Length: 126
Image (cartoon, rainbow, N blue to C red):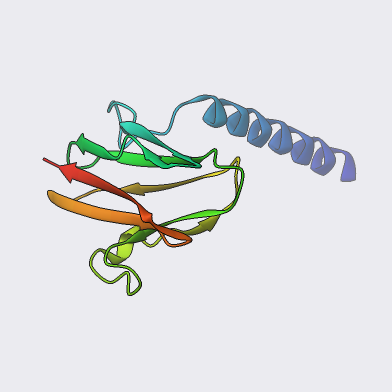
């Protein structure tokens, strides 16, 4: 009686493992048959953001990669209130890591590194 239950459990674990493996191999998609989400990279270095100005399409994602050798932030302008585009208040992230935001509305979005407010950037969404 217990043998069939054990065999069913083993089969279920194998099926779940196979599904997990197949799903993890596929890129993240918006919906069935759609293309992967467009991503654009901005480097955070010792001298600030590169590129400082970027034009993207509505729905695109920007990834900030910290290569500065120290902690950095991405925060909405103006400094120090960060209240113009609150979704851009991505917080602190260490060197070697990244932070990202998806821009779902058209407009011009200013941001800065709160630890060094002279380091500024702009995202223009069309």
